[in-house]
Length: 291
View 1: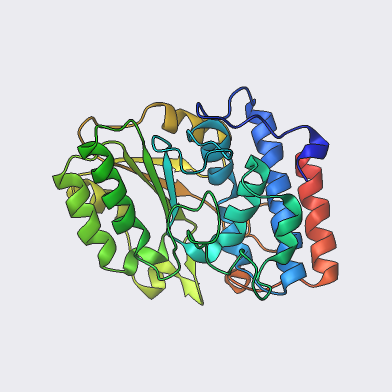
View 2: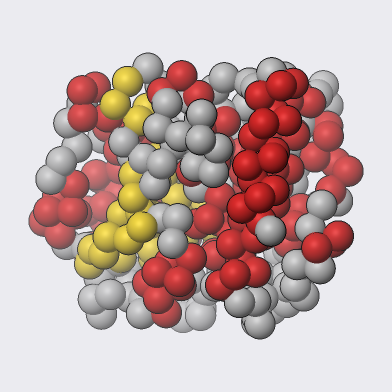
């Protein structure tokens, strides 16, 4: 997939370096394209929420995280936890682009005995730090990882990505209190703030706003960003932690179905699978964006 465009950088213990903002933007479009192909091959997936996080994952894996696909258990690696585990397809395509798994394996997504389950499994796949799926579990796991790193005096950073609807789970707020109490300023939370969850908007389901004020009240440093703007995402990551001694919450304002006009901000694309004609139309749009 990405090899043909020459976009796959060397990923090493020091992280991927040297990609321009434009290259990252094109890579994110390619990741979206491959993800849609994978969903259609499997006949299952969470299309809208996978497309909304592609830019965040691209910037994390190709401009920030210190990871090494040849040594996935390297002790001092950074940790990434996909708490919204139903967006596993976006993670798998990103891991493939980064060299953790082969591109051909993506076509086994959701098949019997495939390593690529509908939710990521640490037991099965290199590069997956936590098995997730039940919402509200990823942040507590990440808090434990960040606390362990602090106690070990490890340079490892911990990043966790949650959905916004997922924040309706109370376990997140218990974890938020603990992270602030232990001053885990090498922990960063990204919230995929696309405003939609299964069936309706987050605000009609269970109001979250004022979201930034809530995280500040829990003792976190907070920054808001356009979750599809590559340069802005990079600038946020360069200034971590935004408040020394506090964990950072990045509220990334995104659009469900980003990159495909007829999927964008449409709640029915939470887990709808495109038809063959819809896939062709979507790929044309994304290919044009990658040009």
